[in-house]
Image 1: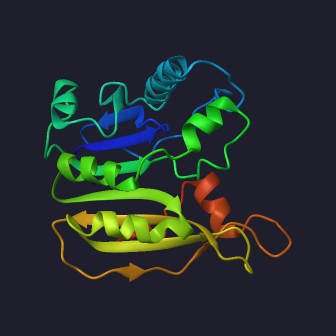
Image 2: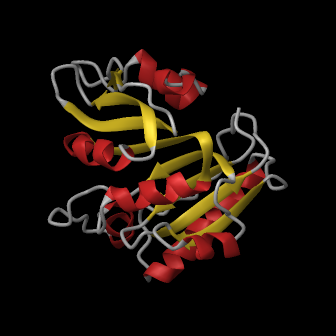
Length: 225
């Protein structure tokens, strides 16, 4: 288990909530309450402040307030900005990223979802920041569009190895819609393409594997590497 981790949830400007956690924590419980940003319409700065507040509240609900901090940073900011916030180079064992990855020509009509999902910059900018924050042999994990996998692999090529790709399929007969990618800093081990993860069966019902992850806190094969 990592001693320290950084979890980014970024908007299309590269800004977002960075939760820095140290030391390693137990598996989080599902927080009670209906808190959600799905239907909120507000200025970008207000959404970022709200997202940070929700992250802090989640840490409290999971009894991690003494081990987690919630920060609002530009994920592509220079090292001095991260250092000023207490995220120094080589300080993290894990970086988990959920960057915006949708094409700007297909925005959501909801402002909060549009801000969170539409990519305005190359994923390489996030990967560079992750590489700076991680210790040697530290691990980065991110989600991206399946049709943009080449971008992710290209971004990881300089600083990472032991890349593992988990395709995520909406249905048994459908191509992957997302990929979960895990990579190790300073490793030269080869790429591994894992068996796909299926969200729903042919009838549209959630698969047992998906239900186990969502409701029973089961781990993905990616996490067991």
